[in-house]
Image 1 (cartoon, rainbow over the protein chains, first blue to last red):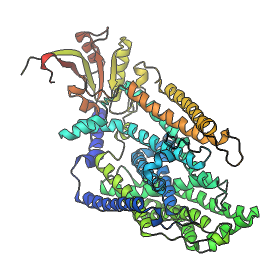
Image 2 (cartoon, helix red, strand yellow; image 1 turned 180 degrees about the vertical axis):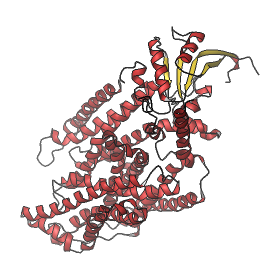
Image 3 (cartoon, rainbow over the protein chains, first blue to last red; image 1 turned 135 degrees about the vertical axis):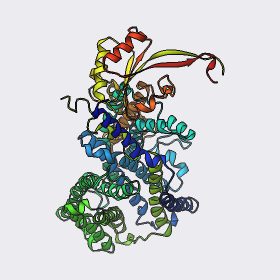
Image 4 (cartoon, chains in turn yellow, brown; image 1 turned 180 degrees about the horizontal axis):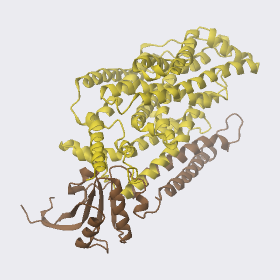
Length: 450
Length: 188
């Protein structure tokens, strides 16, 4: 064996050991403690879900003026989080950004789990989720009626369910080779069987790789317009209505930029903990955080620009209702929420201009947490401040959440984190086969043969 | 133990780096093999050409299914909202096709993606959990760190001695027969 070959073999094996170790060793006490806590939070979600089902959505703070509140805020928040995952896995793949390899798998998993959380909220908002099958999907039903495809809410059903399905397929196809590696490394009978079934008998054949790589490229190509369409369609839920503050053409790009912004902040929030917890600091490095934070600051500027444009257009339109909606946002009873949003999404991210902050885990953490908070508030501001004071003052009302609202939101964070923790324990958090392909010497002709 | 016949169904040649694999693959291609494959832990670029393979036909499946998706979306929306259950909303025409565009796009993507996954599973012959290679013990090396050429005994160019010679000449130091357990010995 030549020296180069020996080095490559050792590197390939070390990569397997490094990345697959968390999935192959007995759970640490820290992991067990974390999942117990998040599992309990997920339990709160389950309880509040059932409470809503049994008692009705009257248990929420929604009222006649504010018909959409935390439920849709949470829905848009979670869908937005998912978008960074698809951006990292699909768009950066098409742009041949090799740094994505270290975080793509994790970001895709995050997308999937965020979409799962998001889907819960419109579902529970129907009040009777077991009937939602034929309210939301075009299925034959005893009433002999069909859904209305001219409604943006129907477009949303199709956009979100397509997004969830395609993300799951993209994620699974990427996992196949790694599942085969796990299968062949497994020593325990049950692990052999489970990973064996999940890997579908993958044998690393080059004919298979050829189809696989083509398919991966196609999935990236399909996901790219899909991710842009999903949040555009979500924004249509608002923009196609005639509510002042919602009825604006800037919404699709504004929502997409906001989604990517919040998603990158969430990836950073989770990856910082993940790399520490599973000792992956040399796979997910400061360089990765640095690049991600550059995307975050760029999208923060876009979001800030959208805020200004909205205000300008409200003034420029000359429509009294439109002007009032924005005056009310910035100076009305929910002004505190509006300024929280502006501070967290536009002011705080300016810190990311500093290289030192972009690369320091400790300095970065408060920034990304505040962005998560700010982006939740953005959806709250858009939804609640627009609805609570519409054109007819006699129909004005205030919204305040009940414990069920709070339980559902906090619980959904628990559900999300529980799924993330399970993923980290049982599946490789970094793509093994992709990481192997970009090792020095892994590409033929790369060595001294040149 | 019951009697067991072990039939040689091919040869595996193992390599430690992609360059030697590539050279050997070119040798096998030039020798005119048809039923053979390379197995690698990660996709090795340029190997398709070294093996003389054409481009994957997956994109044709994707695009066809995508357009079927658009057709299904148009028929579904047109039939349900215009013919079977027409409701006029906002005084707009029943066939208000611009409103049907978003779902056409979504079903394009859904059908295209679903069929791409299906095509990959079918074309890569996934779902086959056992084969002489899977059961040979070299599988763990392949999914971890080594590169292999597998020559199928059913190929017309195959002969146990000459083929082994071919692999060795191409620089392979580790050639093993691939055997299949047949006969009464197989567990039921």
